[in-house]
Length: 312
Image 1: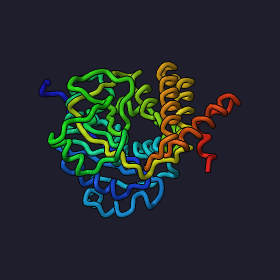
Image 2 (image 1 turned 90 degrees about the vertical axis):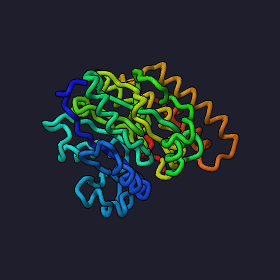
Image 3 (image 1 turned 135 degrees about the vertical axis):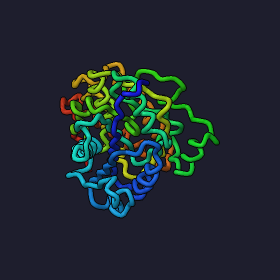
Image 4 (image 1 turned 30 degrees about the vertical axis):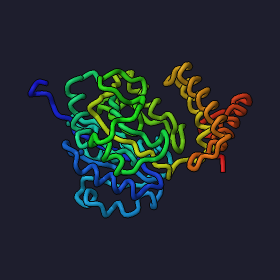
């Protein structure tokens, strides 16, 4: 890398819902980054989402901000986070990048530094997602202690679609840990027509960014996704989103028909089979009911991601 390659300031945006303690822990975790974030923005959907966060040392030192959005929704909250980060220099004169991180993601200490080096070395790269050593969302949720074990190398990485030893192009970045260059953040917006949990909003945003440059998987940006179950949307709503959101993105042109139909078939099959089993933390019967309702709405010509806001 040439010595006069400009550094990029890092801004972290964390949308949170019902996980104040987990978010407080993440703020502490982020203090050990080898490349300190220029600013961290935490966006809750109501006051209890950010309980006690204003007492965190990072907030008291002016290195982090805590705000409450007008309503719940990962897309809306992330857009609010970008607007707040702009006040601290994101999209300003100095080159920068925004990192969208889930409150239950635990990055290695070098995550931001590795992302910065990737952007510096590859000017055509606009988006980066990292190596997920383990993902509690795929099964039993993980603890922070589990994350430390994986990050220390005491436990080998688990199989994951966001893994591997070599860099490669990515169609969609993983929403729990993804970074975008300022040139992309300036032109891309999280689609608020994907409400609440905003399923596949990372696919949509990645697709928007791909029109401006390359999205890549970087094995150097390492972390663990705890997969906490608290704060998630209901089974019925999520099941509806599993069908409605991909169909919406086909129309928008940010998801291919092949990928969308593959997703829909996969989730329909999984929810049907797993509904026969009693799962302690996942409402598969609710998800299947949501799938069926979305398909019924599709036949009636009224299938839309925003319909979940009408469900009780």
